[in-house]
Image (cartoon, rainbow, N blue to C red):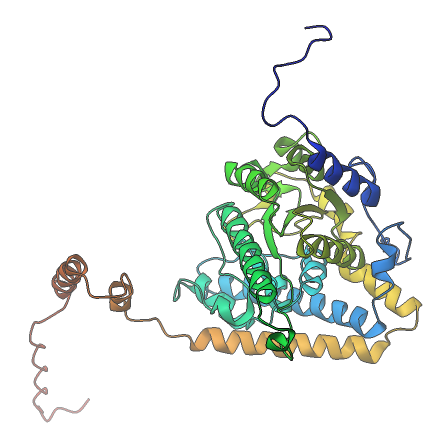
Length: 426
């Protein structure tokens, strides 16, 4: 077409889009920038032009808290795996290796933020004060969820791959509209005295978690289109653990997943997912960006699933032990422990207490799981609708009749008569 252009449309003039892109690149640089890493595998702390400022805010107590959280959730993971092997759970989804990605991002959120997990975010659940024993109710099959999301702003686990991403964007758009209504109401106050003493609600955002495998689902693409179009306050947090069951991440994408964000018109950041300090810094930045009305952010946490995809999986069938060994050398707990010890921020007594706390949690989870009672299946019929439904009542009646067919109504056989004494010596 030479120097000619396509016909002009009502959408010509993308100044706002250009401004957003320029603002993002001014803060983060080119999308092809190296992966953000602050804490190296040897425990030394590096620098970053943007995120070192966020890391500097972390007090020693919070760093010790990061380690305690990661150690606690790893101990919980070991215990849950053992419970499944013992027949106490139908299935378990391990997280070992991804502790830094989950604890770092979870601790960066604020109480008013809302979290949409997949089915592996046990560490994020810990940071949101979910009772970890409640996580196991679903995996034992005695509950459809296990906890009330309203109590912690941590949604129920989603087993359908990527289904939580459109839910998260919709929720974020709801937050956006609620905040606009609240601002309009405040502006319409008759006098300044009307709003006196009423602190404004804190701004909120949404974080939605998914894996590298789920990134190939259409739900993720559609969610990012909507989030970008409506400038929704949502952070997409992709835990790239390198394996979507048996399919490597290299098959899911030919470029870093974080680079996809540019196509949707918002920032994308790749962070070392085994570096809890960097993950916390990046997530804190992203949530601030979203809360302030600057739109969505995509974070790709570059980490590794050390164990199986689930307890029904055997990773030795599709990956080499040498690969696992390379990633174990980048263990998130080991590198933070090295940093804490080198800086005199934690001593042997601290690490011994962390271990004791983990064992105490494991004992609590084990006892609670053993004590769980299987609910009456009739509750499934009762909970189908808010009010009684004739079709459900008919199905329940059929179920009762069907179940009765398995009952043994026969009279018990009479006891054998006692053998008569014969007087013979035995």
